[in-house]
Amino acid sequence: MLCAVSSKTVKPQSLAIFGFEKPHTTTHGSHDEGIRRTTAYAAHERVRHDEIVREEFHTSQHIYNGRMTGIIPTLAQADELHRAIAPSQEAYDLIHTHCVIIATITRQLVHRQNALFVRRCTLPADAAELGGRQPASSAAPMSGSATVLEQTAQSLQSAQSMQLTGSEHSAQQTQPTGPASQSTQSADRDAADDNGVAVPAVLPTDGVSGGTVPPYLLDERLAVLGAMLHDIGTYKVLKDDGSDGGALSFDGPRYILHGLLGYEYLLEQGVDESVAQFARNHTGVGLTSAQVKAQHLPLPDGDYVPMTLEQEVVMVADKYHSKSIPPKFLTAEAYAAKAGRYGEANKRQWLELVAKYGTPDIPALAKRFGMRLVQ
Image 1 (cartoon, rainbow, N blue to C red):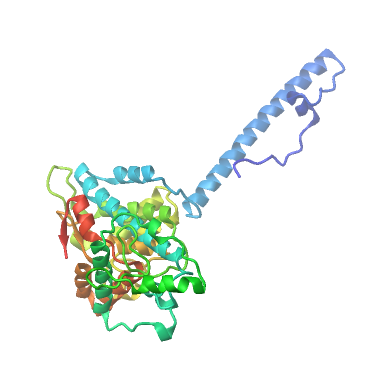
Image 2: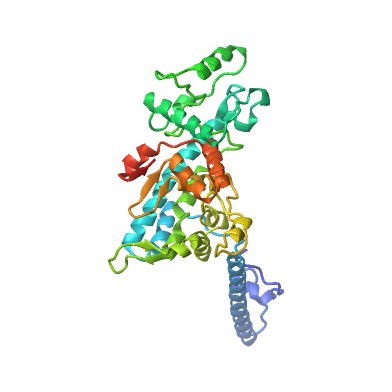
């Protein structure tokens, strides 16, 4: 509420100022006195009204600063947030470009997830895209983490051999259900390309193959916005920020703080908690409180893990590109090797995420953005 009505009783003579009632007058002198008093009272009411508005404004500011509400930025405002904190054009170019790339991959992964969701009722019972939803009797056992990468690599190979590029939403129209559609679904499942590689039930979407049906449609706009802001804290962990014309470099020991610093920066700028969390919860494949303690990380105790699927998909997309100087793209296999440095469980968690969200066409993205590729 921006303003409130005063609880004071309005005197009859004050109504005359607004044309509702004429003050009672008996003589010329009393008439002038009535006008004077009415004018003074109206001025007092205006002052009191202004005080109420100011009080409520400060109250709303207190609530706002208490993080109960905030701004959902536009993409243009997200760019302004980058420019406001970037210490140099070089730093902006590196970090903002990385965020654009992650937003691009995020959009592709979300398109894939939503394409799978709309096909959930028409997939064969044994479709790999159903993931945990498939009956136990028809579930194909997986022989370790290598199987996940083999499946995603085969899906990507079949997509490339069929020359599927760009958005494939049109190829995923809802199929009819019932006995009449069984032969169509069987043909869909049994189809193979010229190399004999089985084609998945749902053809690649925006270059992304594989993946499993999500529990709901993902919010593409929120995910892309989160991707544009997820690494905004990295401006605060630059060792050499390029402001003197020198080369950029990051402060290695403090780099782990970039997510929390970005989160705090966004909140300070009035950004809503739901958006700021993208910065806080994207590091690695998620940091738990136990990991923070075990690794003696310089972070406040707590879990730094995605709270929504939109946050998780940004975390996954972030692993396919590095802000190293010069920047580079990494395939799923390349990041699996990197994740393995922090333990087999960490690598296995990454491979499960690859199986969940599918594999984007990273070589095509590296070519599109003119950057090197680590396979």
